[in-house]
Image: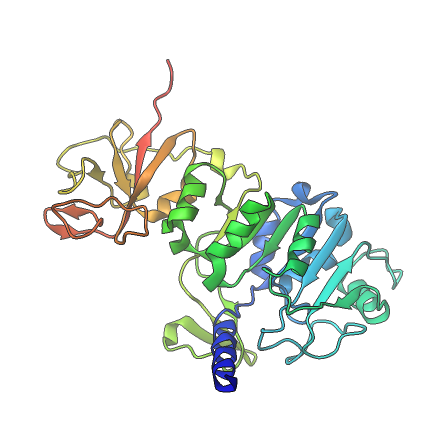
Length: 354
């Protein structure tokens, strides 16, 4: 039994390490600038955020007054390989190494009397007010009863959750009807439950979803692909493909129409061998005068306006996906002249009433 328990702990520790991706402050600032008014008077909860390292905590704490927050709550997880192990952003009164913490901030006074609230004021608060930080009874896992009770207090959740638990994490936010802004892999869009939320207009994408995002990782994190790693000033960073902001906070972007310029020509838009829809290889090439079903790349969701198009489904491999499967093909991937395409999202233009 002891050996089984040890092996389980080692597996959990390994999994936790692979989920340790620390978001850079520049990426947080670039996205959060679009939502500032929606945070006024709200309780913000960052429930996957070690105060020793989290730039989400750093952002909200140093902008506490500017955003007009009512309260900021952050919790850390004892399974994190770096809790108390690397140089902290802050010294926290009452903290004991790797012990998971809950930090609650209700105000950030101008302690240095320089007329502005900044990170120095936050550092002073955490260092001298032992009531700000209290130890958690459990591990700090977002699924624990203790953390769920804190979640119930929150109006908005903002964090970078464990990527391996993204579906479970989002399901919890939806269950408790929370507003949120979280990071996740683009391929989450293809998961049956998450696609359903997007289709029902309950989840959509944020603003900054282009380019490459680099995440800080522990020093011993193994990165096999050279192009996906870099070291800057002794700090290791990892890029893991297209990472998107998932949210249900209001955005102006999702109400903007995609500008369409191409006209439908049958020769340019072949139909699938296994479904009555035309294939579109680029979102920019969606024809403006076609009213039938179209298969578009997954990147379409980043430009999706529910008043311009309706989402119908996904053509993809796997029974657990929402993919459409056919007797004449072994899977749900789209085929054009016998050639398999990458997964496609099926859409149809919404006809405007005259």
